[in-house]
Image (cartoon, rainbow, N blue to C red):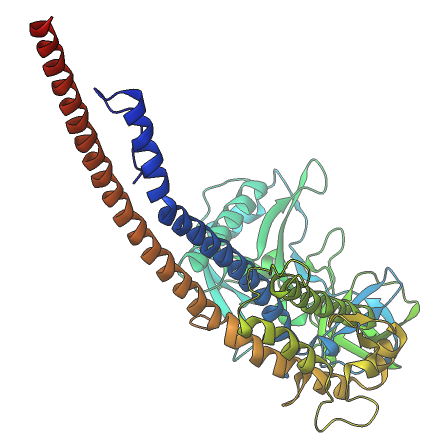
Length: 492
């Protein structure tokens, strides 16, 4: 609420000036309170900035202090071939391996024998045997049973007259049965086989079925109708299809080892087969994606991720330096002028800077000699309290040769990240010291606002009082002047 010190109607300019000067003097306490409020707001803004920087450091420390998933456990893999790609997680052992991709896993494809498109042999079959019901076996793995399968029943009663029309009727019946199985949750949409009618030439037709899943596990299965429709079609024939006869396109076999549907590769001299081209169980922690069956041996090496570890450490150093530099600027006192930063009178924040430096630089209990301080991995403390990575080789050597000790240097019970995080948590957590400080500042600002409102009301009353007093004085003076003029007129 403001205070009006503008011209007072009916008062002479000299009285207006007197009122303005008087109020200007009496407004000094309000100006001081406004200045104090602004200082409080500036301090709150600085505390908010510190909260943001501490939260960023806190996030980085949480990563480094996580003993179950340390960034120093990350792995790097160099394959250098188009035949396969490799990735590795923290459980993978470092070392070199050889790999040859001999065959990629594929889907199971079945085709019927070749029919003359305009012929009527299939019409004769149905006229003789009537409606036919058979089933298609589809792989539908579960977490508990990766070999689980579902039998999808198909009923066919064709209306077509030519072979191609009836093959189309069979296709529709299979499609409808598979879609019903998807709709009722028997199989998932990505487990549904594909069925179509193909025309090798302009006057021939064949029924084609193809699984949507690779490997022996994803193979199709069949249970024929009572009158042997599938045998007539030769879709389920245990033979390799050619231009005229039906059967499989790729040998199904009787297990993963004998099936040509599986991938086949040689890893470190051992021949292995898998149902997919993504192999996760050949080497612990290593995923191999087979891309091209070149038959050529290539090597790959699993190594510690030195570059990634260095990036993590550099980020840690940057976040620590950001907080320490900010605290140094906001808590310093100019020796010449005696003026200080917004937090210079707060011992809590001045102490935090020293504590963070001590937490970062003192030796870690329980660590082997030569790897118990940040200095041992090339991180030195500058004179102003900030940190600097001065020896990248020392850090990379520790990542490569002693990951366990390096991990404990940060994440152990007395690790650098562990104790620094405990320190930062006291300030940055919800309900911590920073929240308390901001709440305290808000309360102070509210009290100052209340006092300013009170002063505004008092100044308004004072202004009205002065107006009334000077108006009375001015009225008295005018009355006396009028009386003097009247007396003068009578005397003269």
